[in-house]
Image (cartoon, rainbow, N blue to C red; front, side, top):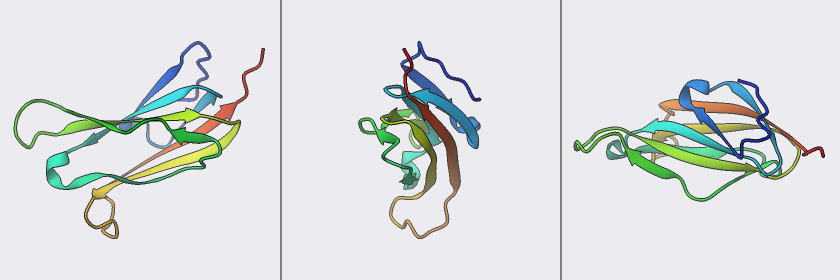
Length: 118
């Protein structure tokens, strides 16, 4: 997945896209959909990226998959492109109580941000 969608204000990326690259323009938002189960005590913790290229936009949003107790759901994270440049976004899924425990999942995304050309 390496596409610039200039007319699209928000790009969508899923966990299955981990390891891929996206091209964005300044002002665009990438929405990342990541599986999780809040009832397990695990969450998407350590989030690393170059904040001179992208910034987190709002708080993460968690949606349950269904209404059964203990069922899995999805976290939605949004990042806005603020300056031209390149960054690797790295996110770890694991214990929210002990960030020294090994991550259960890792999500990575290479982000290339371009200036808008008139």
